Length: 162
Image (cartoon, rainbow, N blue to C red):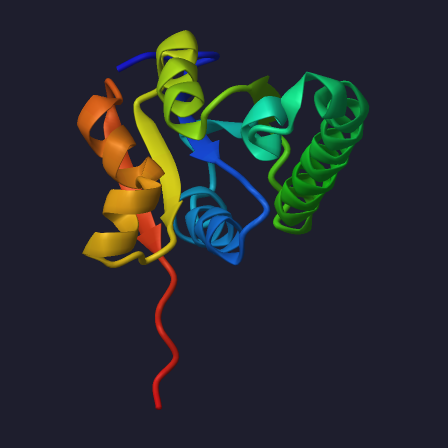
């Protein structure tokens, strides 16, 4: 197991979804703040998509005008997500946190972060997609479970009871 300052590294994928927020809160409440001397150093990773993947095909003339606007919006989103994640950590008195915003597809960004930090565990939230949506949209958690070089914990937000 990889060590940094005598602590194992836990990478937590964060994004702008309620599922990601729940996964971070659950992880802090159950695996980090419950221990008198936490064994994990946290690395929070936000994968910022490329502007071109969000724009699609607008043609060369439209791209020059739209891409800077989309890039600015993606940077704003990244800032909001990271600030919210840091606030969640601060409220739980978790101080040993590294935050990264990395350009790219979340699947690859998270697996690369695991390798870069020699993480022993990767935590991701689950959107709870069914088989069809997962097949069409892809599943970051499924990809990471098969490709990350560490233990992967997928945190599911409980469904409300009727």
